[in-house]
Image (tube, rainbow, N blue to C red; front, side, top):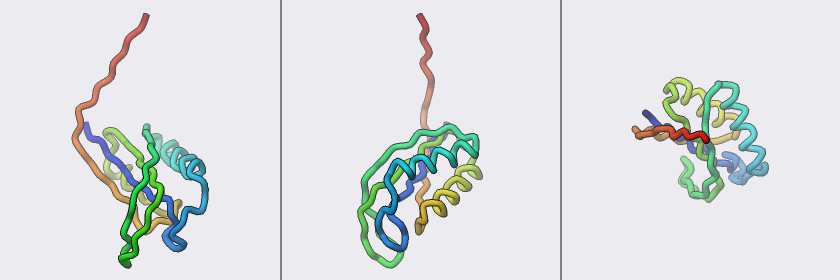
Length: 106
């Protein structure tokens, strides 16, 4: 099974600051995943980023995790989030993982 993560910074690519509260960005991200009919999980991280011009910024990022998602869908979601969040770029990582479900009932 593959685990794909999309890292999306929340600082605007021009103003270099976060324009809206994190919950608003999460809401947009959830709508994007819903529109692609893609199950997901999302977490909020803090980190730093070097822009193409070499300028460094620290920012809040959302990390979107998708399991066994088709590469073309992952790229379309990443492109949408890059545009909607006005980012210079977003980062995608992909790993093989062992995942399984536990079910139990009384």
